[in-house]
Picture 1: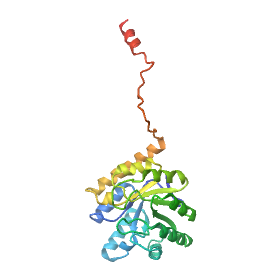
Picture 2 (picture 1 turned 30 degrees about the vertical axis):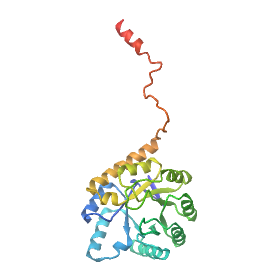
Picture 3 (picture 1 turned 45 degrees about the vertical axis):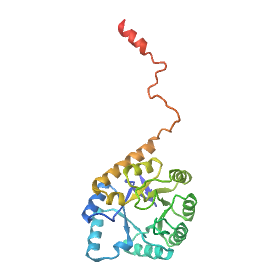
Picture 4 (picture 1 turned 90 degrees about the vertical axis):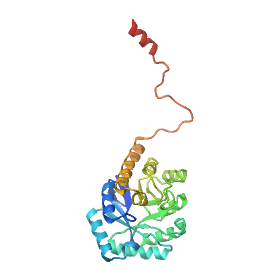
Length: 264
């Protein structure tokens, strides 16, 4: 079971609700994925109107946990005000915190993220901070009070998968009691499986599903990949070797004697 701030979930997939060709496709993809948590951009959905009403009706029908995010915020002040608005709109203490530092790469401003995290935690929020693979930053976020940390696999929407694998493995090893979620950059189900094979607790993705040729089929593919990745991690994967080792050793196996026994 996946546990986030004391709440338990069967699925290890968190899925976004943007960029789908239609709301109907989004709804079907989320259902097919088995995801129990969806992320919603507060800035996008707060526009309201008829389309906004339809969107919220669909979310309610899905009966999922909403994780609002501060996507599009480039300052601490903006992120905090957006988080406070999200708390009013969704009646939740959860917030996926994004403080973006660079418009081209959408890399998080780690200094601003840490500052905003401390303010929001003091205000009673349960923060899901989006950060880089920097171990020191992750450690500071945990020391501040975060029970969940969300390092990127690679740049948002890039589809490159896990770029800095060794750094992310080290983060997993150094923060054994923290729920770690790979957020951003995953483009293929194999990327998600890899994250869980490394011991990460879950993944969050949007574009890889919504932007595919068939979001519903892709959602199913990611769900299956996550199951395989987690099962592999729990089973304990073999360690790579520098030399070959036969899967069926022949030393000491009495093939010749067996043949002789048949002919006698």
